[in-house]
Structures are given as C-alpha cells and as structure tokens.
Length: 86
Image 1: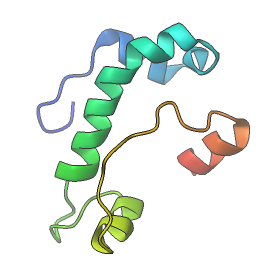
Image 2 (image 1 turned 60 degrees about the vertical axis):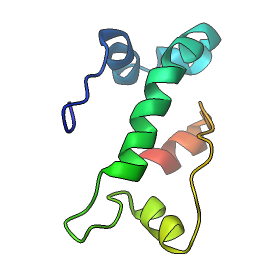
Image 3 (image 1 turned 30 degrees about the vertical axis):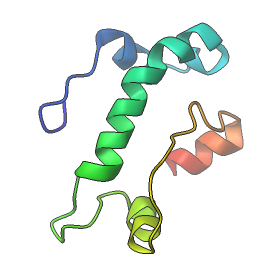
C-alpha cells in the first residue's frame, strides 16, 4: 500500500510469483490495475526533491518526455527481468 493505494489480492499473488509471465489470461486480468498503479508511481510519487522517485522516469521526464502509454507486460525474458529488477 503506497500513499493509500490498495493492491488487490490477485495482483499481489501474481507479483509474488512468476506464474503470470507465461499466462496471457493472468496478464490481461492484471493489466488495468497494474497500469493504473504504474502510472500513479511514475507521475505522482516524488523524491523529496520534488522529482519523480523512479530514476529512469526522472531522467526522461526531466528531459521533456511525456507518458502516453505503458507497455504491459514488457520484456518478460530472463534478460528483461534481470534488467527490470537490477
């Protein structure tokens, strides 16, 4: 729960496990909630400096980019997951 946002039990379950990565139906069920949470995080959650908390969003939005679309589920390959999770 970040800033009063609630995460459904379904989304919480899937995010704690990798079962959704090969399940297109699960991805579709998760998409609306996950997109809304991601958009909120990228646009509204700020560092104490007032800039976006996410360093990639901070860089791109600070250089004039705008957020129009979130590509879900993105790159779910092992390399893509490694890059996303550090």
